[in-house]
Image (cartoon, rainbow, N blue to C red; front, side, top):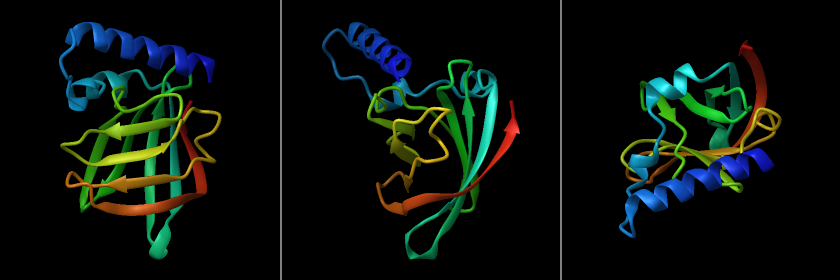
Length: 143
């Protein structure tokens, strides 16, 4: 948890320095898709059961520091790759994607707690597609 806080705090300081007081869009703080995929040394698939009997499967990538780098899921009929959003993530919450795309939100996620973290998923218009999703099963894909 301390590493996550340190890394995310460092990212916030760098972002604040780069903006020189101007607002930096969250989408500019989303990890590069190629980097987020390539840096994942561990991959896990999580099946969730959500409110209104909805089900969703999300695949997560984690780096060598056991921090999440991306989430991938079939949303609105398409396979969506959502890099971690460092501008909206901190030591309390983890957010994948950006305000112009789909977003997956959970409590601060790491490799040691992803299997206990509930999620919510919303579309670009902030409509909640999946709410109160709890882990039903997990599968190790890589690492």
